[in-house]
Length: 439
Ligand code: MEV
Image (tube, rainbow, N blue to C red):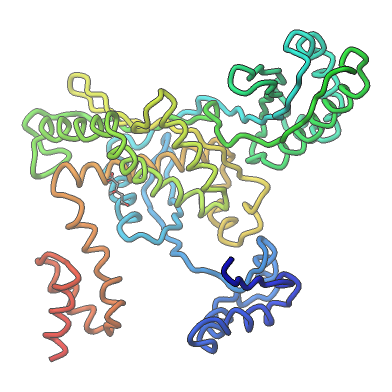
């Protein structure tokens, strides 16, 4: 085997020692160290808290924190905070929000709030025997978790159901305890996992003490929540009138032409998984940005959405278009497990402010806001794609990144932005223009 260098004891070093060690691996250690120190929060107590979110923290990694104003959702106006590094996403969300605000805004409804967790176990005594004992096991599971669930029950949530699932057609001797939960305004991961581990202990103890089970073996394999929550679901839509021969939506096409092209664009994402992936990525540009801005878990939200997009056996679009007479309706149905209490929501300084800016929503309201941001981005992306194309707008927004690569001064930026108001933006065109003004 090739020589490998294992780093030991890294986690036990203090922060400066870690920075020195890591800095010694890069070409400019001084710059590395300075950049990390410069990234620290000016308030040491806040920085300490941020350090403790994760492990081996050396500094903070900056992402832009932006605002898309004019989101009218169920009649209430929001300024939506978005954390995203990609140019044109905030502009796209803002553009669509403003467009729809004067056409009734976004409409949204919650279709369910149920979360799921599983204890996966193996049992070689057959389905009939364990099923016969399961109502007693289930009763003990409820009783043994009462300490954990007491507060959640006071808030109106708790364990909704516990059932036995026979999975032996997939893996010999494989069963699950599948439980559903209502975690109110918390995302609920810790609550669910604690309940599941208590279920697992109850199951083990019951098996060990039950005479009928004595000649068989029951082994708990693992206990963990499922990030697939198809019954924690929000539906959001916009609806507009199609004016025959009118140019309500776009200057290039009449309304009828536009909505037909738009519908075809979305239908392609319903039947082709290559397009569906990019289409849904555009939806998550908006959703993830809200999820991040409010201190929620974007990996869980994305994983869940993509699984849901494949629920019928083929990966497909999460949004759909319905045209009925003179009405155009564009909707998005997406599962997501969000929290407005617990986790980082009130620890991360900007997450806390984001929630304040949104009027301290509960989890259901936040689901509606995040899905509206997703639908807004999806609308803007598909609209651009089926009309003037995506690059024109995107490259205009990306222009400042290109200028920063060439270390343009403020004056050079001003001149270049003015020039490219009427020209196609590309890396080489910008570099050529900069050369020309720099002589
Ligand atoms: C880019 O971040 C997102 C888009 O590709 C989405 C789409 O194609 O629908 C523009």
